[in-house]
Image (cartoon, rainbow, N blue to C red; front, top):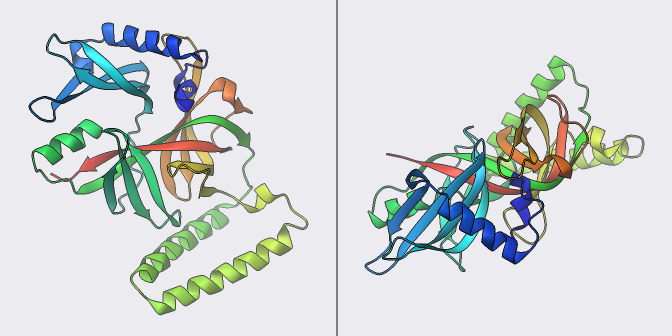
Length: 294
């Protein structure tokens, strides 16, 4: 089963035959509006069945439709859709080796790494590619699923400290952009800042808790390239229910390194009580919806 299936409310589905029965039920109950089909060539098509089981989240089933209109599922994925603009950085899209799925790569300076995510609107991209239409990206709405997380208390800051941190973050992003273009002064400045930061942390960690020093973080986690360990501020939250299982799911709007995205996590998998202003710490699987230029 998919590791992150429980993040959209299916924690009780642990066996392969249960998953197969679930997919068959979702396909048989799907309305025509939930089914999208793309003809890849004269003999092959790609069919997507999207079942929304809670607001903006559910299961995508991919397979092939035969001549009688029957859909044979090949793979499935839990999904979460975000309507928040997360990044306008340059984005490239590449196909995975195993199946008709795609990954996006964002050259995002705010997180300091090349951010890789699973492409959620696959059919739209493939349709544009087949029609030789423009596939240049305008922006990306990022979202994520998590199966383990905890709530941290916020770091107490004055309004002046918050504004100072935002200015410093913008200046660092500008320096990183300049460094990527070969600006030697920017590279030198960043190197000096990193040395100063390391010495400050080394001194403070002797007397302070690590989570009072690290306000937020975004870093790769594990061997899969689209999974990350994050700490971010909760700026909005909703508690929704999966209409099939009744399980409660938190949909958290997170601000992490000045980047906004949504995280869905099963209520059973979250330690602590989430509230606006507190922080979320956990491992996430990142996905995103790409908005293409017309």
